[in-house]
Amino acid sequence: MYPNFKAAAVQAAPVFLDAEATADKAVVLIEEAARHGARLIGFPEGFIPGYPWWVWLTDPGTGSALQQRLFGNAVEIPGSIVQKISKAARKNNIYVCISVSEKEGGSLYLTQLWFDPCGNLMGKHRKMKPSGGERLIWGEGEASMMPVFDTEIGRLGGLQCWEHWIPLNIQAMNAKNEQVHVASWPCFVPGDEALVSQDPNEVSARFYALATQSFVISATQIHTQEIYEKMGQLHPYEAFVEYGGGDACIIAPNGKILTEKLPKDAEGIVYADIDLEKIVDCKYQIDPAGHYSNKTLSMVVDQTPSPVVTFTGNPKDYGMKYDDLQKEE
Image 1 (cartoon, rainbow, N blue to C red):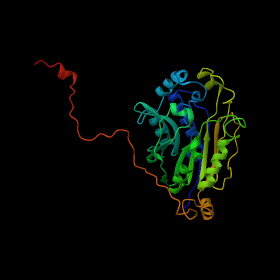
Image 2: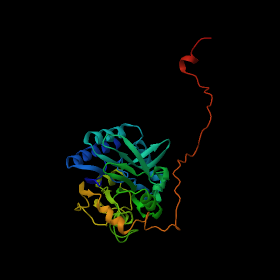
Image 3: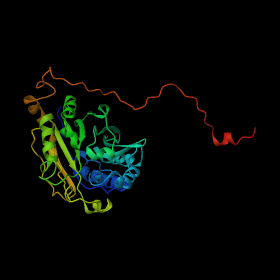
């Protein structure tokens, strides 16, 4: 059986550094996608509560106050933000992949959260290696958090931003027979004078589709005057960021773009019909994790969770409750 369904890719700005308001906006977008018949919706990178652009624009000391605001608006599991997205997925009978700054302990991680149509949190993917200045903000992920979910609409997975440039990431996901992929991006920097040529999101997403023979739901933020002002109008700015920068689209496993493009400064959702049977012919021609691989070239992916500290044994609790401390001898 090869399901047919409609998918949705978001192109929108967050309510910058306001997690609750951005979650409310995400719920509205989820409802809109469901009204249009979508069974899966993908969100941009770091959508809740917004991408930390300041790491590319200023020094760590100047960025500290913004980091504190980001930390205060990060998403905890469980928590109110997760509850909102979970309820929206259940109410609208839709799969949701949403990228957030996740708080665990004293650290943040860039994380895609996956919800099923019953509102269950199926799992999460943490960005394996934050890029450049992002390492001031987010810790690293690990292979135990690179899931592909087997669902009634296909095998679903995702990566974020420059993870799509890493061959080992691509091969690891390919080996799990991923069929539908959510690519989460921030808006991007101006064109030819920047690190890469214009529309690198689209180039990377189309390559990923070709390299894995999967459908790619490519979702992007847009950059706004509000974000610029909330960051304190940092300079130099124009050389790195331009307003807009949206490039959301949905791509077939042969690299064809299936959606019309929105204006780069416009918010909205793009849709495409996904026919998983189209993957069969692409795999027939090339399956890099199967018949097109060479068994003399191999990789080992250790998916064992790797905590920094592991506790064993049962320590004695020497603490005492207030009432016990106040008892008279």
